[in-house]
View 1 (tube, rainbow, N blue to C red):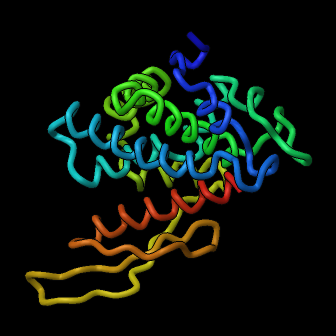
View 2 (cartoon, rainbow, N blue to C red; view 1 turned 45 degrees about the horizontal axis):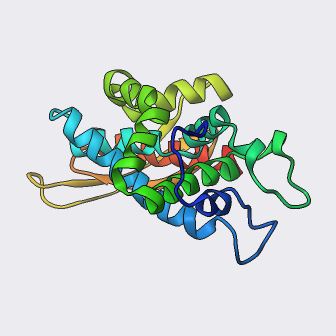
Length: 218
């Protein structure tokens, strides 16, 4: 049994999953990461769907986004020591890998486990390595609305809350739709639509959170 909690029947799958493109432009973990990303999305979506029947589609979307974010997956990869085990080329140091590289290693390992032993083995790995974070989303952060999360982030980073700009509205009085964007530290983010201003602002906050996290991972 390896420290990953899965004993590979085909050890070459794990080796490939831990091989960065800087080592080999063709035989690397990029395809494995693509597969693992899809498997992870399915497993997390299913867990959220099954575990809490009261979660709305929007709440499940927010919780899944947090669980499969570069930040979360990189943390899991670090805990598993994947950076130290990875095959890296010149210019990459195991002790200072970006979140993106670490998250890709994690997803590639999921892909390798899936190919080696199927969906249930992949599920066991995901629940073992992300289970605590999944519980936190279901009983904590998943129920904190995106606007609150964005406000807390802005206050912490820039000392001021975000603002929301209504870009457009459509429809009749009884069937309106609103297009809103969040403005963070003077920078506008992607627009989002909602059936009410409150809903549109919530989705706009989520768009801003995703963008800010991507910048943080760069």
